[in-house]
Image 1 (cartoon, rainbow, N blue to C red):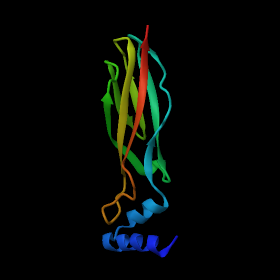
Image 2: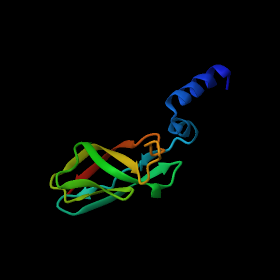
Image 3: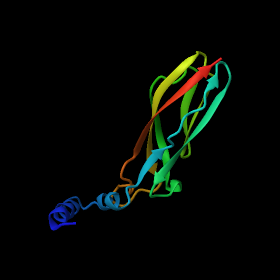
Image 4: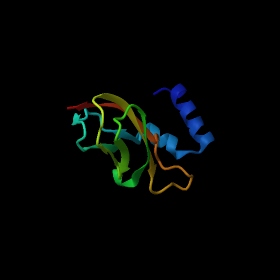
Length: 135
């Protein structure tokens, strides 16, 4: 790495006096929602699916999901809720069709650093999913 590239990074670290910037450059600590296809389900039958969240370059036990938000079309009768470091999609769908939606989670550390940071580079993860409700 040349001095021209190192100098701005050092200057930014000195001015912000924030170790989390260096942590992000070195370890890139962030949450990652599981990326996979969801099972199809049947109308009027209970559906239950668990998506895991993994902390990249950190221990899951140091963090928790503080918020789960969905955008798009989750099947009527279904919900998405946090359970530890997992997201549970469950309920009893009432209409046929393929439903496309995004799940976005926000994580927070159990213990916050003295400078108020949680030693985390990104607190959010968002993935697109779809569920087919069949007969």
